[in-house]
Length: 298
Image (cartoon, rainbow, N blue to C red; front, side, top):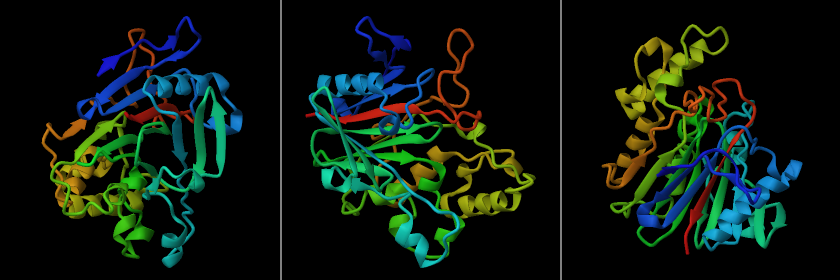
């Protein structure tokens, strides 16, 4: 991993805040934090930011970038949840699955696919606007790469889901591994640019969500082990790294450091040399988003 100074280069491109090389260089990741907002890229036609993404995609030798969008209606119950919820699902890099295409500098950007992650079956890229949610990356033994949005509800099924059992919807990790069960002994995994448990509290005395938080804490400890909820327990600091680690282990994937890389960044608290926050963070009240580009190299 190398850290770059945020800002603009002489060419006018927005410099990455951080860059990562994963899985022996087979995957590269570029991440941008404050001050630029990487949300609503297609809607607001943010051409400078599109040009930056296109530059890095072409630099890596790829010309297609996919950005799916997951949907969740909290008012749905029963089987309707499974029919309509796309949070926790993964789709392919098939252009026909996406509702909008934008061409910038000879790079094709696809938006509007219904999913929480993308299977990169060949060289290409996944773009994730996020603010505290982890970017998850997986590489199978045949070179298949999956990029996923690792938010709380993507990893920990809401109560409405738990009432209707369906393994594909339990976690985006399960969905990413579909078709690879019992063949994950060489899986390479990474969790990047997310909120750490110490910053991700869900207090039991919250006036609106207190009871829900109690139920969630009990579910996490029962389902994924005591390491998933840090102390103090009644504040329910959720350790998403521990959740993903347990889910991978349960699927038979390795989780030692040789195969499972976890970035130490805490997007809610990291400060630059001037004491300013580096990343957009929902937990800190931001409605803006960081940008994360995950590239499967040719």
